[in-house]
Length: 127
Image (cartoon, rainbow, N blue to C red; front, side, top):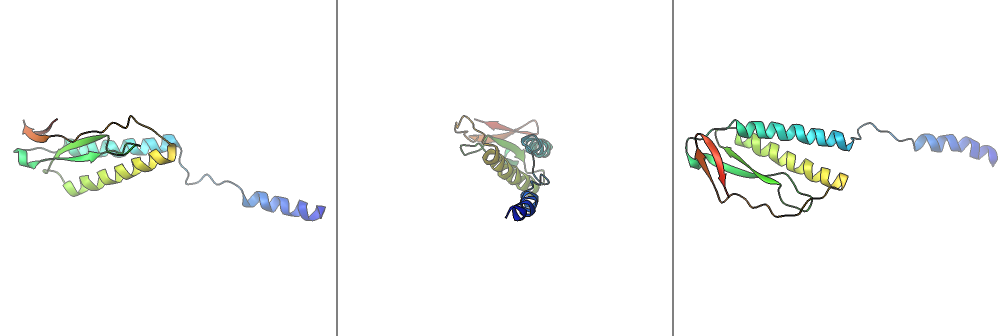
């Protein structure tokens, strides 16, 4: 019995070895979110408007309690489908981050803009 235990112990230990490959740290996850946020904000900021009808907004971010952190203002002069795809990806990743790392927020409801308007070729939110 003792010999069997000595033989099995190394096998059990080898099979329960932790493999950290593919596991990210909170810092890594936050860095990826920040990089994606910068990409999204840069794309939105590159938009220009000539008239108010081209100005739009989209819910941006995911609060741990639910709802967006803010609303991103943009014009349809950019690739709107690409922007929407990136924002959707960001919102999903932030929701996953919140669950994974147990984050919390103020749980305050963030109202969307009452309207968006074009001023000096830039879309502006009116709250």
